[in-house]
Length: 506
Image (tube, rainbow, N blue to C red; front, top):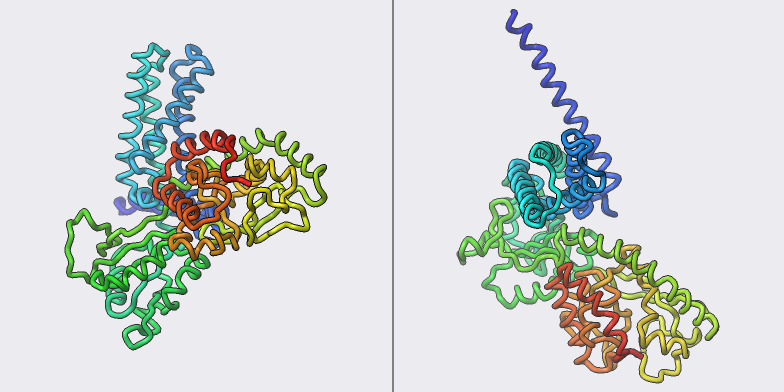
């Protein structure tokens, strides 16, 4: 009886703690639901990862400030505390990024996260101390550094444990899953779906199957999932449903059919995998990635990972806003010149293809006479084109007419750097761009940009030949495949020098 009387309060305490944690997770999930949801009410992975890195940085700065104040006291100036806290926080988050800590898949594994946190923090603190000693900068005391390091590691690790539980809850409710479609029907698709569902892998949400075959080899329903249409209908469905992953079950032996499918899927901003579950071909284990227990051949990934999207969004919003402020006086002068030069609105809106072939309204300074404007760009602007106003001729040659697109960047419709958005009826010679270049729509796997790799390499302005649009598309695809932040900064820095030539711009 005494034993029971001693145990009962402990059990009640444990149950109470679990109940508190569960309620905290539910409250956090509800808060995230409103703040981090996209238009389909799925959790935005870039926003989630950005919030995680921000929390890490705040923890490092807070524990650093407290450690300095408690141990070094009045011996350290406020400016030194701020400098060290900022430097350590930035360096540690970058080191965590280098160790692949900021991905949804990594955050689902809290024990591995603790190891990465310890490794990253210790590495940064050791490098900071070593560099300070070599250069002769003032350094924090050993006691301050120890308290700072240990407290930061503990708090960030606890945050990761809580976050892992939170992600599990969001996954179970279908809010943090990869929206997936299967291409190819029959027994191979059924076997794949059954294997995926039989594992513990809950990160996928299978929407259905696409298959061109109309005979009994492709039923209306496969393993309980509906046949959603033919493969030609997949691109439109992908845009509307927000597909993240496409898994192809067509046997690799059917080379011609496989190439036809892949050529169509190449323009989609999604991850594409070929299922090797039913294949007799066995390659090196390093050739495969795995989803659950299913071996996959990784054919193509999104141009930007979740974390890369975070970096590019920050670049666009912050640098875009800064450039907009700097350009404001020039834009005001251009607006006045347009008003004095000819009648009509100062700004011109044109519908163009944006990310994933979605139509957006791109802003430009009006450069043509209002009654001669060509909203669809059905006719190319040529040298000494009578439709262009005197002011318009100057701002087109110097690309000042593009400056209002900084507003599109700040609004999130465009990027500072990317493939230029083309008008819906834009032509090379007399042919639509998409009929000249088969890979044309693959440009739209990334947000369009105000400037781009094609522009600083001379492929801007008039496209009066097939070769010009071909070279422009090749440059755009090269940029998409090789994106990096330094690459973007180089293009931005090079753009003003290219514009000074005015080459090919009328």
